Amino acid sequence: MKFSVIIPTYNRSDLLIETINSVLNQSFKDYEIIVVNDGSTDNTKEVLSNYGDKIKVIHKENSGAEKSRNAGAEIAKGEYFCFFDSDDLMFPWTLSVYNKIIEKENYPPLVLGQPFHFSDNISNEFLNKPINVIKYAVYRDYFSKDRTVYSSSSMVVINKEYFYKIGMFRQHYAKKEFFLDDIDFMLRAGTITPAIIIFEPFQFGYRTHALNSVKNLKRVIKSLDYLIIEERNGVFAGGNERRFERHAIIGGPCYFWLFKALANGIIFDSIKFFFRGFPFILKGLIKKISYLFKKKLPLKEIK
Image 1 (spheres, one colour):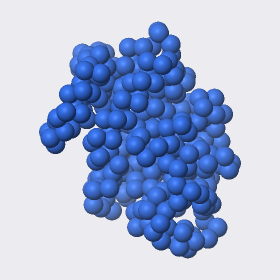
Image 2 (image 1 turned 135 degrees about the vertical axis):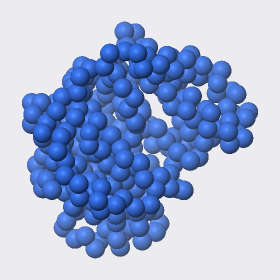
Image 3 (image 1 turned 180 degrees about the horizontal axis):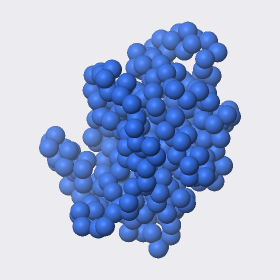
Image 4 (image 1 turned 180 degrees about the vertical axis):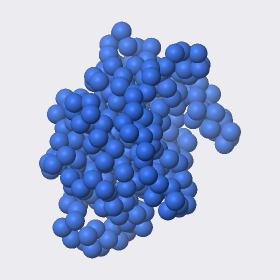
């Protein structure tokens, strides 16, 4: 089997139906769906039972998305793990595009897609449009990227062997106050070589809604604090040689969410965080500005 699509979920039964159906609507068929019900208290169990043997289901006590993703990976049979959030949508071409790139590039360990942001519905015109060209970059590794890349767990497609090599998702982070497990994961996967990033077409729909976990700004700031602490403890990949790139990756969301928090009146926590995060914020800004002037790696194409 080529892909295992692993979907953790908690109390999102209505959105979960849309997510599962979008995966079932793939033009590429060599995959399995594993849904991990993380102790939901709504009607998620009933919703999942309606799919019968079209999906595999794990029911577990609530312990966070990180442990849920790992639990799904433990029973997965796919050569590649495709992690996916239960409020996002796959497009009909998503797995087909991943597969074409994987075969074209001789089975790379890490492939990353990019999102189309939406809040309500995605038009049929968008979903039914033909994919005439696939544009992507083959980087030495994720830390070497020369373009702004969105961060989400739904962007990650990783070879099974490499998933275990980097230590899976960080289970000691499986706390309700920690959100940014996708950034933590990429900081540990940052030196996997090569890393492929797809820029066209969009590979998944990232849904913006009132229940997005990142809407809790105080908890986002606390999660960024965890990343800074772990960076200083030497947890992430690349050693001293890749320190600037790691700091810049952490710094990008630091300044974005800092200004969001300030704009929403979270003054005291934001000021405290600014002094802790300033070196990272500065490097993140330097890296972002450098993208404007640095000659970028040419994109490869599949037509």
